[in-house]
Image 1: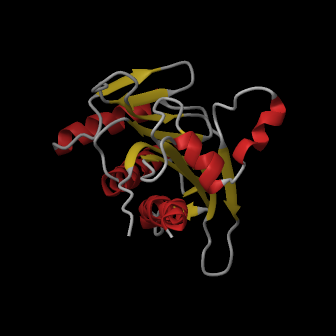
Image 2: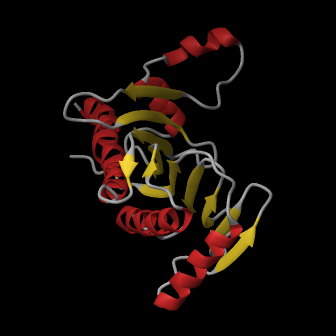
Length: 230
């Protein structure tokens, strides 16, 4: 069976809450508390026009590691780093819970998690060829546009249902920065979460979004290589 190792390039999470003016003082207290505990998830504190931000210095160009406290949400970003899905979920749960208590938030109105990964097809010369001839089956029909399509993609939306309360919106397309790679994205949306007794769901939702991408979506993508092999 073909193996498709994934290379995750981004973890994003937004936790929505009732609108309130971002508090630089609350973010700074949170930053100091984490340093006093001896295990700070972020090394720096800054105030931006949109709200306070806790961040780590980028390890390379394009990388990001931060949480921004905006008027209606907490916005976590880990891009082009070495963090795993488990580590990201644990960080979001810890920081979000501590920040919510600092700001007097009793609940989050909803959560949106975005996972972005890359995989390489095995039996196609390029990811464009895989999308055109393997997954989509366009062949030369795109020539009707009289222009070369540089990005070919597919979007799948899975609404919540009984037994699976999280919605998933999946994108599969060739990756513009590497002709051999496919870009996979899952944007998962979950409902309200109480800070007092449901905070573990924040972490669980990150794990569910990641599994849906690297297990189900990768299995879907891989099937077209297997079909060619047959």
